[in-house]
Image (tube, rainbow, N blue to C red):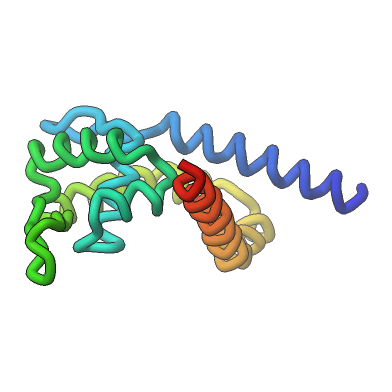
Length: 159
């Protein structure tokens, strides 16, 4: 099989895997389902505490009004708080709460459980190959994010 064909096959497999994982989006007892945008935002706020709404929107390739609305929902659930910047009182920073961190960990664990179970059912060779690919897949994810961020910067510069 040619290199372009293998890359297309990889893209197809990753798309299907992503969809399968996405469909298993966990519903947390007492919290109910959390939309994908809110899940992504909660993770981004935990990964980059003190970000502005604009920075969060850019990092995730989302529209700022959608991020603002989702942050209001997350704040209403007690997962994040908005704080005024010490350096510039006009700037609002988004910070995770202890409840938000705990919820993120619970969601991550509930997503990881079926993946762990599926991995356990694979041959040792397939498990090892997937585990060895973790760094390369993380690098691919970072590259995709940087490409998206570049497109967002180009789009906002032309407005």
